[in-house]
Length: 292
Image (tube, rainbow, N blue to C red):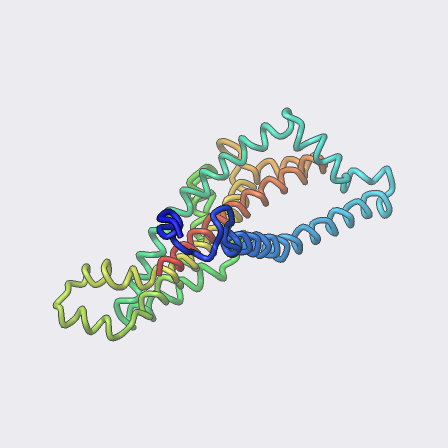
């Protein structure tokens, strides 16, 4: 045996061969991940797509099979709403401008409701007496018919943006109060005792223990309120038309003029906006829960 032959390492694999396992598991793992992702998309995406297809089919059936041609303006077919309204700049432009006004009302109303709701929730968690004194009035805000007090809101605060914001706050504040209070009173007792032994101040206890522990519950309240605040803004638009028109104002105008295609288009835009807002808070809620 030559010196070169003796010095060659013995690996059990010829120099021009690649081990059978090289790239095998990683390739199969990638294929398995892609297959699971596709199955996940199919599992969660197929049902809403299927239900949307059924709804559009039912819509066409009502427009063409139930309504006479002379009454088809009551429910125009989907393609008429799409091409005559949603894709028509002269029609969709005012809707988007009005939706932006409604979005600003939603933002201000949500911020005000969050600040007031969290403050009331913290106050209620400070003692059973405060809870019994405040909670019934929070329930009153939840169950009171807003449409019944809209005239009073208009008389007291005018018919502009302030009144619209107040309607948003009234509708959206209860979930924030209830979930904030629940999260704060559900803090682990042993952690409370540890902070007591450490002689933490009430502010330190609130910021360093209670708020972090109650954050998932608070985010649930914020997510619920995010959907309600859109409803409140649209209701405010309908009843308080002074100032810039919101999407609710246009809904009322289109209803009065029997502009069914524009009415349905405005409803679609408002619904998409509400779903988008709710989805954003759903993502934030999931992120908070993952970090915990």
